[in-house]
Amino acid sequence: MSRFRIPAIALAVVSVLALGVTMVPSAQSQIRANPSFQPVGVSSSGSGSTAWFHDPATGRAIACHMAAGAIQCQSAKLPQEGS
Image (cartoon, rainbow, N blue to C red; front, side):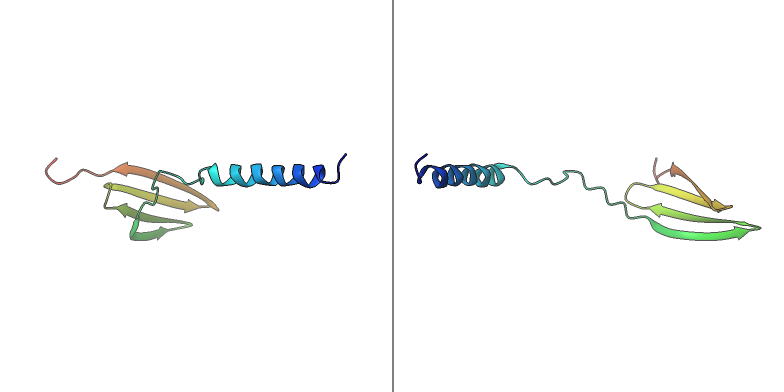
């Protein structure tokens, strides 16, 4: 092999990799999934506790109950005014 052939091959490989990296689109999600749940209230009874949250943008409410180290959440859509 010629002494110029190895550096030329290495330069070609690096160039192809650099071109490939610049042509690959960045991996960004097109979905904005950032709910804005606001705390509404909490209560406790015996060995369990419940917390309520509300997302005004979607009208959804979540109630999460914790008892015996386990958390269970229920979600529901609240009726909107004028509906």
